[in-house]
Length: 496
Ligand code: NAP
Image (cartoon, rainbow, N blue to C red; front, side):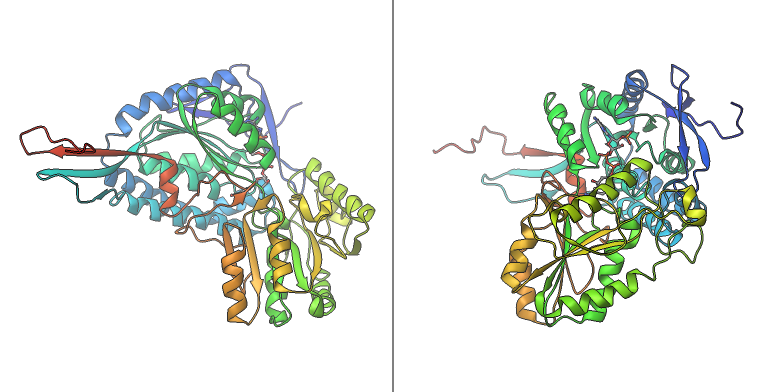
């Protein structure tokens, strides 16, 4: 077959390289099926070469003064800003989110570049008083080494920046393996890093399947840290495999996020928040709302208000500014989403709207699913427990705040929750008792800001956080330096 589609390469040690086998995989627009390009079908060989390149670059990059590393990130922020529209369009073509959302994705990268650029002049350690005279103690952050970043397709620029920028400002070097559904956005990001002046080999990008490239990174002895975002299933595997060589592993995984709507809530406000959280990004956000836990006194009214709005949502190609909801990322995910509609019906939940693949007109070219709402969902149903990662929302009725909190907490995930109420006491109780990493009061479940720690509890994470100051902890090792200037042996931790 002859084609004019672009053929892209890995970027390793400052050189563009194909896979040794010469094999490629193709990248398609999920809204239209259009071919966007070919990428190297890399494997263990390319992953290993990239790790070695990153290891070699580490020796000099860690010694570049942190403010200088920060300045490069600042320039990355400037370049991302300059290329924002072009990057957003590429991303929409590659993974389907509507333009407003892909612009937001790039903006998160810009924000992170400025934030971590600033960390180049902070990277605070601390000094505290010591027990003995004529002695000082300072705790400082050290770079760790080669960081492997394994990223998902739903935030193809933002998530790589959340991992790479703190890793880089702290003096680590990087190998990134982006999701196979979104190689192009990640490639553009890496090009921008080099345009900003990053020395060769500091960031290396390798395309190819998780099962080969990803797997090689999990086992390579010179990879010190794995920063992974993706499904809980893949994340668990990453943790188990990486533990064998005692790598540090930071996991950001799935969610089953809930909006609680109490009987005193401003329902108009709640409808806006639910609509955006459940159907924005076609429900393909880790923070997407997939459960509404609603007080029975307002359940019927809220359902009616929401359905009227759901049925007005326009599906289509995200490049069209009039579209509200873009496609599903690929055919297998579309199938998975539809299977949950069948599961929900079989479990006895009531399908109120949606529940089918949208095929009319131009939609037939892509992977589109109608925004879907189920009512009469019980908290233990699979519909209410498992991550669907699509535009499927379940209404669960409760009689009290205590019951709402219990239902909220009773899933294996714990990323984001929201509560709509006008009662300050209820807000305080929810704040105390909800066991998620993020809680919104009178707003939907999405919209985290990069200066705060991001991550979740239970099956969503393994205790680490991304972004904010907490994000630096993943990529730095604490070193404590004691200096004794007494001129004699002074013993600490010994009874004298
Ligand atoms: P995924 O299938 O788990 O893939 C994530 C990444 O892991 C991809 O780069 C994938 O490569 C790679 N991978 C797969 N198997 C691997 C293996 N054996 N070893 C090493 N790497 C492997 O997840 P996804 O479908 O891309 O993303 C959706 C999931 O991400 C959802 O569960 C969502 O909730 C979660 N997510 C979480 C957050 C958060 O911050 N908590 C944010 C965004 C998304 P391939 O693409 O080549 O398969």
